[in-house]
Structure formats: structure tokens, C-alpha cells
Image 1 (cartoon, chains in turn orange, brown):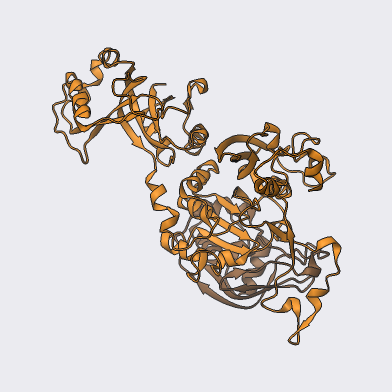
Image 2 (cartoon, rainbow over the protein chains, first blue to last red):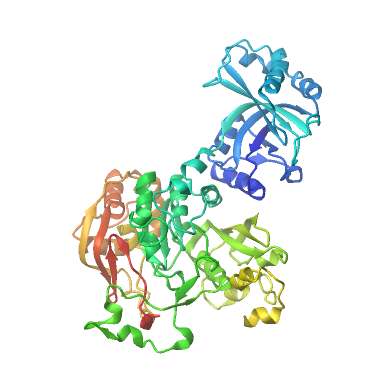
Length: 455
Length: 124
């Protein structure tokens, strides 16, 4: 299969290959690449694809890919590059008469307009006679100088590598701007940024025909991005104020529904309901193609679940208030107890194992303590296979986007056999997200295990 | 709330465990609205095996809306069938009202199209 040049956006470097793999599955396009050649400090990566139609299709909904080009050559200098390009002059013929343009881009050093023009002129040996059009050119050629990452510009430094190719297709980075949270009619204080919300939709393989669910829906970011890509979606939250828009930054705009109108997604975002995922009313069986969620860490928005502290008698619901039994009043709100992060995660895994169809995906954020991270911190489950684990670092802690695929049918709570094996990979190992909120507020000072258990 | 969502929700009150009574929830005093939506055949066909058809049929009769008695052999090619399913599960919205469990009589309120499925303190 011929090589193509992937030009990544230089953001979220740990997420880029995971997205590429997801796109390959989503669009059903076979790709091959050498993982050992991937470098997080270069925006360029070579992959092999059957043909250019497939290359174009592969990247069309990519968030972390700017463009993909048919590979024509590369080298440490322009002489090396031209030697390679000149090996295949027959390839130039098809573009001799059409309108075209050259795009010169660089990484690690910025080029002046004059330098760019000089570079373009060096390609005159290709003999393209057609008109040069900056807009709507029939063909676009891509020159990329990679100087590597550097804090200050170094004028005479050699490029690490120069790449040249014919642009075949572009990703969907314009969506990052379109779904920018600042532009949304409705948002809350834990609304996920647009780029990551869109990326999650790709990890979830959200597409026409699939049903996606977010059990901690908040202000509904993931419903928007998954449904943008054609999936139908539903969400729930224990806090109905977020859904209805009676809390948050922009109140009284009709909540999530306001955003559906703004993005014209009302026919695909099916419903949002108020309930606690710990006590959920979904009927038994596999219902969803993907579960996409940002579980509450309890840092900014304290995580809650329905419950009574230490088994107190539920007398409050039967109290008579204004002549009506309390729990039947329209403003009745049941009591809640704190919901510990490690419980949230293990409940989520159990839920996904039962409610996903085989082949369906669970995509969620897992906070980890940077210093102490151990791969065992990522929970495992007999029917959920880890597909990707991408880290977004924040100094003392990180959050990881975990993608899992349901690989087998869930035999339910038959004899507890599967339940006992889920959770952390090692039953003696306390995952780093345990007591995450306390760790966060103590600035991730090392604590001994015993204190963590009682704390 | 759309009917497709209703078809996936059951009563989840503690000790209310009779599967024949906790699902489907019975609509009470509902205010319906038809909102036109683009038909998505791919989604409908993929969802058919996940729907509880007898429950859907029961609900359609309760609301006085038409639905074929059973799923035809090639639902993806049955124009009339797809349209009927689409109209009922995707375009029919419950704006106000409630859903009642035949087992424990819990009433789940729906207001402004959003169902409140939270349980009371004594139900968890």
C-alpha cells in the first residue's frame, strides 16, 4: 500500500494514534503504520493506505489531523528531497495543466513570506503550467519543514526533515471552533471543551445508526458531538438542574434543549432524564452502542448518589408537609450521600458490561495521580477490553481518556464470578483514583496506604 | 420524552421486582405532541431487536396510536412499517404527565418533556 503523510494538529499528542485507529474502524479503511516511528514531538507521521479515495475518507472527521497528503518525497535537505521526487516524473504529468497552489508550513521555526516563496520557486522543475490559485485550486501541494520542538527560534538551524506531497483530504478541525463552549447558548462549570468532546465521539465510534448514552450528562456536550456525527443519543443526570438549565453559567435558556436548537440536533439527541446511575431504571439487556462520559471526580462538582447515611430510617419521605406526603410533593428531592470516585468507576464498568452491545464502546475519563500512576490503576473487566489509554497531564495529576470495547456477552450477576474479577487488576492494589478528591486538595502529597483506607 | 425512551425504562423501586408489572410503565394524564423528524432507517432497523415489541404495542394501544402487531420479515424494506415505527417512537413526545408502575404504583413525573426517575428515600 502506498505511503501518505498525516499532518497532525500539535495538540493532545497522546491521543493522536488512538484517534487514527478509531477512524480506521469507523470508516472501515485498512491502514498500516510502524508504531515505533511515531513521535509525540513531530506533527508528521507516515501511514500506508490502499488509495487516495480511502485516505480522504479516513481523515474527514478527524479532530487531531489537519490534512493527509500523497507522499512524494522527504529528506534532510531540499537536495535529498528533490532527488526522491525526481525518481517519479511520470507522476507530475497529471497536474501540469490544472490550477494549483503550494502550502509551505513548518514546525519549530516560523518562515517568512519571502522564505516561503523562495521554497516554492525551487519546485519549478515540476513544470506545472496551470494557473496558481490561492482559493479553490484543483490541486494543493504540501511542503513541510520539521525543525523539532524548540523554545526560541534558531535562524540557521537545519530542518530535521522536509516533507513533500499532494494534499488529498482534510480533517474536521473547523468543528473545534463550531462547538467552542464559549459560543454555546447553554453551558455549566464542568462543560468539557469542544476538542476533547469531539475526540470522544470518534473514540466511541459514534455514527449514523448507533445509540450513545451519557450517564453523567451534565450540560450535554457529548450528546452534541456524538449526534453531530450521526448517532442518536440519550443522557441522564442525578442533577436535573443541569439538564433543565436552572443552574450553571447561563440560566433560564431552556438548558440542554437550547443547545440542540442551536446545533440543529433535536432529532438525534433523543432524551435526557433525571436519575441516579447507581439506581437506574434502564430495563435489562444490551441497549447502547457506546457509553461516553466524564464521571464526576468530586473535585469541582461534588459527586453524589442517592442514599441515606448509615441506614437512617427513611422517615423524611413520609413526613406530611402542607398536607401532602413529602415524597409526593413536586419539589421533593431525595437525600444523597457522597459518591467515591473508585465506586463511580467500578459501577460504570459493571453498567457498561451489561448495557453495551457486543462490539460497543465505553469511553470515559479517569483521573490518576501523576507520580504514582501504575497501569494497574486502569480498571479491568472480563468482558471489556482496553482499546486506548491517552493521557492529558495537569502537573500533579492527569486525566486519562480510557476507551474499552465490549468483547463478549455479559453473563450478568449469575454467580458473582465476573464481579469478583472486575475492579482493579490486582485486588491488593488501591487504584490511584481512590479518594481522588482528598488527594487533589492535599496537592497529591504522598500518603501511606492505611491513611488512604480510612480517609 | 420520546416513546423509544419509554420503551427502555422500567420501575426500579426497591422490592418492586415483578418483571411483568414494572415494565412497561403506564402513561397517566399525558399531554402528547407530534414533532416531525427526519426518518433514520438505519437507526430504526438497528434498534428493532433492542425494542421490547409487546411493550411497545401495549403502549401504542394505551395512547390510541397505530402500530403493526409484529415486526415483518424484512423490516428495512417495509416502507409502511418503518414510517409507523418512526412516527410512534421518534416523533411522539410526551410533554407532561406521568408514568405509573403497575407493581408498586410509583408515579414518575414528566415535566417539560423531562422524566424524573429519581426514587424517594424509602424506595432505595
